[in-house]
Image 1: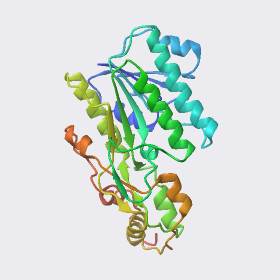
Image 2: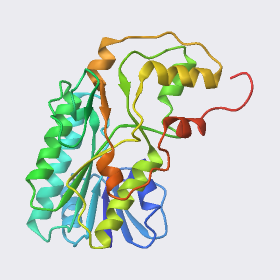
Image 3: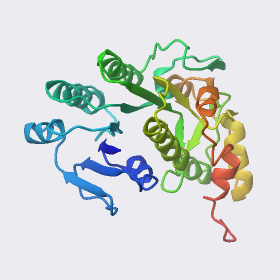
Length: 280
């Protein structure tokens, strides 16, 4: 297949590395590592010349993995809503891609009492981040292009060690659930969907992607602290719960698609990331 990555950050790069039998293109604002079967276009996605360039070709699949420049509302809207709308509008003027994967987040859920959520669960986020991402999802849904929206839970892996740094600083968690997915499984699942499409199958329009082992934040951080040999203080932060919710994410549809998790447990993934030297 001829595949375009709109946004060529870490997850897109990891996905591309699994697709050596396909013809790949990527758009990035800054230089990125290149692989033999990928042609990297560097520049602003929203620039008219770039939009014209990407819409002038036919793509078998387009993978949209966006990352805002900042954590504020303006940055989120400019990234998720403006880019998604501009790219899909550009495609509508010429030949449409055969398939779009749009990477989303479980922040679109607002459940806060430990409910189990899946693809059919209500989405009514309280925070602007979830609201803006859900707005962008709806732009994808309104498009005539076949799509899959993939809602990843908390992504971790080498270079994404926020929790480890928090634990090393002595900060424990509260009594809300933490849902995790390793970055290699993010890439693996996106590649899996593309290969399903290449094989003539029709992926579902929505997937919730998580490792399936939701754990209380206090228990996750206590486990990390034990592995690291440090002490943490429990923190029942109301703000943390309001930002991330308190829910258990189901990965049944993801597994039913035929995907096998490389890291079905946070213990497996984090164990590979922990420092092994004495005195840590």
